[in-house]
Length: 202
Image (cartoon, rainbow, N blue to C red):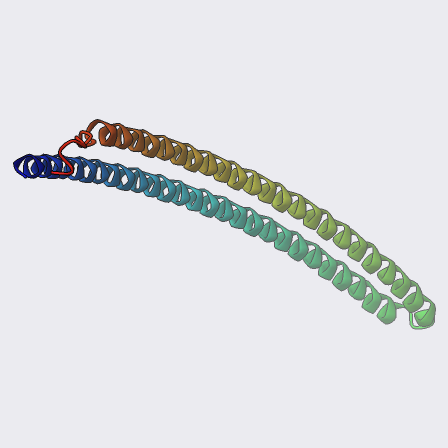
């Protein structure tokens, strides 16, 4: 009976040491996992912050370019309309002078001047349409170019973010496997001695 009691005490002692070792290793594993996850969250937040800054900067530049082109387009349209008004006023002034000077040829002169006026107006409006279409075409090209660059930047940043996340997760898996290996070795080294069957029947 004394030998069984001694064996039981020895077994309980070894089992207590084994439990302490397991708890210590699990505590270290939890600390390592929490540390790696904290670093991963910081890296992801940092990359997302930089991505937001890049996107906002590109959108700000795009808005500035669009506003600048629209401002130039408005100036061109106002300039052409001003010239058109001047031409119309000049033609009307000539028409008034002709009407007052030559009453006999009023109908022929009026028809001729109106025909010229229509031709001038159509010509100016055609040029105005060409200018507007040209400016709008350049604006569309600029917008498409900027959006293409923005898409490339976003895809590049997301690719780098995915690589960073995969790298950190790979390191985390290696750390977990290493700690589990140490845990298995510790459990194997702290296993209780085999019980002597000669004293089990006493």
